[in-house]
Structure formats: C-alpha cells, structure tokens
Image (cartoon, rainbow over all chains, first blue to last red; front, side, top):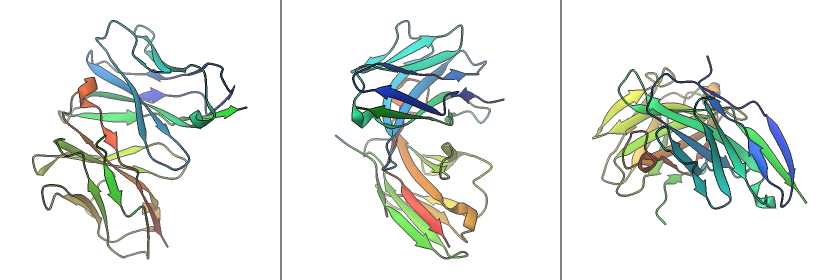
Amino acid sequence: AQKITQTQPGMFVQEKEAVTLDCTYDTSDPSYGLFWYKQPSSGEMIFLIYQGSYDQQNATEGRYSLNFQKARKSANLVISASQLGDSAMYFCAMREHTSGGSYIPTFGRGTSLIVHP
Amino acid sequence: EPEVTQTPSHQVTQMGQEVILRCVPISNHLYFYWYRQILGQKVEFLVSFYNNEISEKSEIFDDQFSVERPDGSNFTLKIRSTKLEDSAMYFCASSYLAGVKGTDTQYFGPGTRLTVL
C-alpha cells in the first residue's frame, strides 16, 4: 500500500489565486511528521513546511499553510496568492518510525503545479 | 543561510565505470542521507549515515554502493560499476536530528544528475 498518496498529477492555477495540493498518508504510528518540498525545473528540493502529528494547530509558513486533518489522514498544502515562481513539482513526505529504528521519509509521486498569468 | 552543497552538478560516465558523488552537509548536522530520483519519478531513499556508520539502507542500496565521510565535512556516495539504470538525480540531505519533529527536517542539496551511457 502507498504510504503517501498525491492524487493530482498536475494542477493549474491563475496567478494570485489560492491552490490546494492534496496529500493523504497511511501510518499506524502515532508519532510522525509530514513535510512538503518544492522541486523547480532546476531540480533542487526545497523544504517548505512541516506538520507534526501531535501539533494542535495547522502549520503556516508565509504563503504556505498545511491543512492537517488527522482523522482523515490528510495533509494538504495550501498556497495562497500564487506567483509565477510557484510553478514546480510539489512532493509530500512523511517520516515515521521504521522497523529499522530510524525515521526515513517516504515521498509521494508529486504534483506538478503550473501558475499561469 | 547554511545549505547543503553537491558536486558535480552533472556527471556523465560510461557503463561499468566507478563514480563518486560528493556532498558537503550543513556543518552542525549529524545525520546524512542519499536519495535517488529517476527522471519523472518520486524521490527514493538510499541510505542514512550517522556517527560514521550506516544507520539504515534501502533495498536499492546494494553492494555496488558505498558511502563514506572521509573528513569532517564531506560525505560521498560511490557507485562501483555503474549501470544504465543508475542514471538519475542523486540528492544528498542532512538533518540535525533524525526524528519526526520539525527540528529533524532534512535539507536537500541541489542534486547531481548522473547520466550513464
């Protein structure tokens, strides 16, 4: 079974509008962390935002916020006021305790976001 | 702001040759990682390294791969006898801790694009 599911292979949004990128996860571990990374066409992976499983409030970082719905096991990324520079691949990742005793993240397949003027 | 650096940015090699990919993690970080991303696919964990030894590795990380921290700053991935299917982007990452908290976030380098001919 997929640990991280990103159901939207591609999304389009108009500049200055908000967009939500979906991410659902699967774990039985009560302690886990959820991360979003941005990968522009240049290839680097840029950390955006983190949400811990015990955090009471949704994480926010500037224009990025994470809509964390624990019961539904979803951790959607919301980008407000989209900019042309937001066009990139976005990966959702989860870190949980592995059988090997460490915390290795599992990545989703990514969502390609295109912001058009 | 401190960042993870990787060299070279692009490496082209002949099948069967050995390659060494180099990384300089963030200076106060304790945990180091290598990931692979085949073109158009998701990021896959290869290996984690802590206290001068491998702490966890995936099934991808077979005998042709090895990692080393030869001095206090560099972290290297060696592929002994490259195959066509090793062509991918290789990311180095580092983190201060290795749990699920936000402080355990992994910061990625810009990647090395390996092309095996």
